View 1: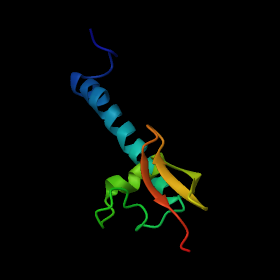
View 2: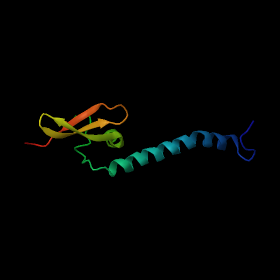
View 3: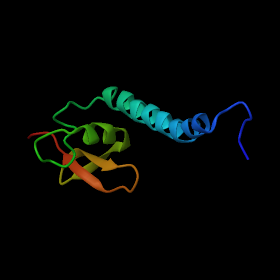
View 4: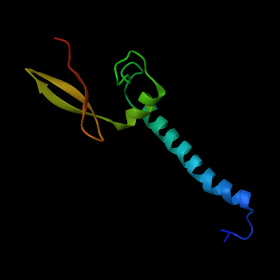
Length: 95
């Protein structure tokens, strides 16, 4: 049974496989827009700390949250993953 009698089998397959591809590209673009709108610099977006910021790390910026924490007698900022709460790093002002 065909989805639409006006579509050829090739057009039907193009719709079935093309639509998820288009949605994936749009989602990746949305993540890129969110990452570019963040207040982090390229150097700060090096979430794994290897000295280089990859495209994957830039896109992951949309999933990074901040919260204030107290470390000894200083108020620091903890960066953590929104999906699971795992700490990425702790940023404290220099004394």
